[in-house]
Each structure stands twice: as structure tokens, then as C-alpha cells.
Image 1 (cartoon, rainbow, N blue to C red):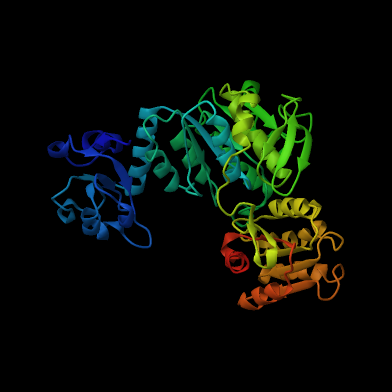
Image 2 (tube, rainbow, N blue to C red):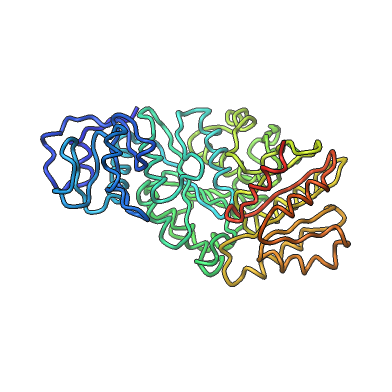
Length: 458
């Protein structure tokens, strides 16, 4: 249960006004959305498209017991304590840092171009085998979501797992400096946000910002087969570096992998005789699990102890989840996020699955690829074969270049392209799908193929 006094909060954020009158008022929660406040909350009026200060009366009505305030005090309410600060967002972040140090859990920070949410879920499973754990919910992983995750942490938390997302340079640095991780994990370097960062090297620089706040004895866990990271870890000593990957050059790697429709089983060099089962599809999820297991090993958790928890871990919604589709089909929903590396991995695994029906893929635009968008969309042809995929549906302006590349590979009637209104594509899919078919739906969230998922699932 969260509990701080106004005195503590004012001190933590460097209040610009006197709050002695209200010093002993206790606050039990923090929120910036007036619709989600409850009695005992500190209201944080953030300034974005709207100025949160304008909603102070609604906040009080919904239970706010105090508020940050960056406007003139003569505009502030008088019936609750207000804590005047220069910037309400920075005050939120400062309060989160204070609370984190007060509770003093071990901190695991996770970033990467792909797989960070799955790795977060797996890491929670591993670490919960020995500790009380709190983690980022959903994708609440930015400059607002991360401090809110910290402030929602129960006071008995022993390990907090914080997902760190970004679009631009220096955003991870802010999050790392706030969280001061004991363990930092980079899942992979892909092409996400290359529009803003220019190249995979720029993306690697941005992901390496996670070590900015790393504690002096902290550990970085990263894919050892990524040259762009190998070139950038020299600021840390050998004892602070742990690698995972598919080959023997890594500290932790798989010896065997058996990927099925709903589970993947593997063994590792650390415990060759121990079979570990993941309740998810994909050989690529083994590397996510290796990152999670590496974090466990740093915290003194054996692979044998962690394996049972991994076998039943819960994946965040819309990440490679199987759904029952219309006409007794099965849908592999992965329409939450996409970049070329991730799309190729999913397609490769989907293509290799055994099934008695047909395989249909529905692929939507991958966003934020900038000037390289055409080239990167076209590169998906490398993993699309008419021998393993029966029908290809492409959606979005950027997918046209892939459609053109596949015209000579897929026969007429097996390759389809749509833009704009999704209803014609949905209608054609509904007419086409037969019992036992497997359908993969993959795109960036902004392309909104989740609406297609909703129409095709039972």
C-alpha cells in the first residue's frame, strides 16, 4: 500500500510554497487522469494537448486529497493542499525516484527494438520464483508511464521490473537516470523508430542509454551476437556484462529447441539435462527467455528454480496469441507491434508450423521506418514462400512495394493488396477462410489490424 505524507512529497519534489499546514496529510495514490482517481490521491495536472490544471475541481470531486501545481497560487484551490512546482511532470518523476529509493527494491530495466514486453513478462515469472515482484503493466513504459509504475509499487516489493520504451534519442537516458537499474536488459537491435534515429547504429546508441543510470555494480544483459552492442559496451567492466544468444560465444545459449504451435521447449548450456517449456510459439521467444533467465541468475535464482514459473507465464495481450477464428480456424494475433526483424522472425516460425489446413498471412504497414521504409518492407519477401504460405493479404500504402515484389512468386488469386477501408479485405477473408486454416495477422499498432482480428475471431 502506497503511503506518503504531504511533508515527504513536498520535500521530495522541492516544493516552492509552504505546506506546513497540511504536512501530516497522508496520500495513498498518485494519478493524472481525473477519471481514475480515488479518495486519498495526489492529482498531477500534466500539461499536454490539454492543461490538467483545468480539471482540478473534477479531481477534487473524484477524491483528490492534494495536487501538484505549476500555475500561480492565487489560481489554486484552497480546500486541499497544493504543492507548487515548476514542472508537474518533472515533479512526478522526482517523486517516483524518491519513492523508489524509499522502498529500495532491486531494479530491472528492459529495453529493445522488439521483445521487451514479452521479456518483461518472462522476467517477472523467473524472478517471482524467489521475490515479491512489481512490473510495468501493458506498455506503460514512457516518461509518464514509468514513474507511474514505480508509484503503484506495493511497499513490500523486492524487485521491480521496468519496461523502457522510446521514439527518439535521450528518452531512455531519462528513464534510466530515474530508475537507476541494478540490471539492464537489451533484447535486440532492430529497425523500430529508424525514421527518427537514422540507422541501426543510431538505434543501438539509443538503447545503450539504459546504462546511463546503471548502478556502479550493475549488470548489463544483452545479445552477444549483435556487433553494434559489442562495440558499445566498453565502458563497463567484464564482470558487469552477461550475454545471451544462439551460439556458444554467449554466456547463456540453447542446446536444443523444439517449437510447436502453442509451446516451445528448449535446453541450455547452463542446465543441459533440464527441459524448459514456454507456453508460446517461436524460437525467437527462446532468446527472450534466455534474457529473463540471465536476470534470474544475477539475482541468485537457478534455472531449475525458475523453469516451472516460465512454463506458465502470462503473455501481455496481443503478443503472438492464438485465438479461435471463424469457420473453425486459428488466428495468430501479433498485430500490436511490428518491425522488419520481428516480422521476419514471426513469419519464419509460422511458416514452419505443421497444420492440416492452409496458412494465410495478413500483413500491415510497419511504421516509423523513414526513408528506408520501401527497402525494409520489400525485404519481407525473403521469408515469404508460396511453398509454405497459401494466401498473402497485404494492407497499407507502404506494403505496395512488397506486393509488387511478390507478384512473380504467388499465383493469381493467392496474393491480395488493400488500402483505405478494411471492409473489402475483411469480407474477402471471411469468404476464403476454411476449417483448420491458420491465419497470422501482423502489423504496427497504428495500422490497426486489430480491427481485422476482432472481425475474424469467434
